Image 1 (cartoon, rainbow, N blue to C red):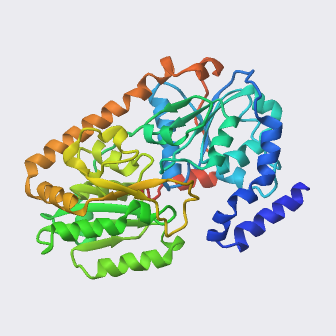
Image 2 (spheres, rainbow, N blue to C red):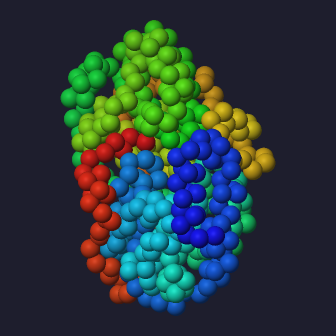
Image 3 (cartoon, rainbow, N blue to C red):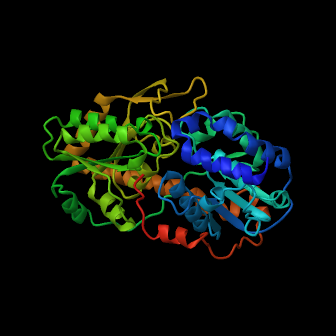
Length: 438
C-alpha cells in the first residue's frame, strides 16, 4: 500500500467517520502502523549518545499536553535541559514516513509524552537507524485498573515506561520493560487576583467558593461533574454563603452532555458555569478565587488540578481512590469514601478490558466533609498547608533525576542538550496564552 493512498485514507478517516465509530474501530485502523513499526523496529538495541528530547502536545491546553510541559519543567528542575518538540504537526502530516524527526531524534534519549496510539505513529516517522541509536522512554497515563492490550504490546518499542502514579503502573500488567513512577512535577506559581475574578464572575467576595472542572474531550462521566453538583446541593440545600463554580472545557465535543450540565446549573442560582477560554493569567485568578476544589471522580490517572490546587495551599475534597492517592494517602479529611463498581461508560471513551472497575463516591460522606470545610476556616487553612507540603515532597523525585535518574542518563551527551525549542510558530503562539483549567 503506497504512502499516498494511506495518507488519503487517513484524511477520510478523520473527517468523515464519526468519532464514536473511530473509537470502536481504532484497533483495526492501526493495523498498518503496527505491522510496519513492530516488524521493523522492536527489539533493536540502543547504540548512540546525544541530546534529551521531549516530544508531546506541548503547545496544547488539554491534560496530556499540560502533563508533557510538566515533564519538561521537572527535567529542568533536575538540572537537565531538554529540547522540546511539538508532536501535532508530525501526526497530521498525511503521509506515513513523509516527515521524519531524525534531525532532532538521532541518539540520546527520547521521551515520547503521548498515548500509545500516537506513539506508534510518531515512531513510524523515525528511520530505523535513528531508532536503534536512541534510548526511548514512553510517558503514559491510564485512568482504569487494567490498560488495553495494545498498550502492553506497544511497550515493546520502548526501553522503559514512565507513569505519573503507582495506580497507572499497576494497570500495565504484562509490560516487560521497566516501569518507573514519576509523579507530575507541579511547579509553584504566583498567586492570582481572586477578588478580581470573583467580581468578574459575579460571586460574593465573602462566599465560600467550591470549584469543579471537566473536559468534554475526555470523560465527564469519569470526572463525575454531575456528582459534584449533587454533593454541593446536599451539603448546602439552602445555598447560604456557598457557591459552586464549574469550569468546562472542550464544549464542542459533547453538546448533549454540556446541555445536561447547563440544565442542572440553571436550576440553582448558587451554581456558575464557566465555558469561555481563559488566558494563563485569568486561570491564575480563577484558581485564586476558589476556597476548595471538589473532585468526586470515578477514576484518575493522577489528578493534575487536584495537585495544582494543593500546591496553592488550598484544600481539596477528592475521591480516595486511583491516581490521586499517589499524593493524598493519609489525608483522610480530604478524601471521599467510595465503593468500587463495574465501569459503565455511557460516552464510549474507553475500550474496556473485562473486569475494569471504578469508584462510586459516597455522596453523604462528601457532603458532610464539604460542610466542615465551609464552617471551619482554621481547619481549612490547616488542611491546605498539609496538602502543599505533600506536593512539595512529591516533587523531590525530580530534583535527583540528573544524578540518579537511571540507565538512560548514560545515553546523554554530557547531560547537555541545548536550548529548548518548540516546533513551529503556531506552537509558540499557542503557548503564549491558553486555557489550562483541566
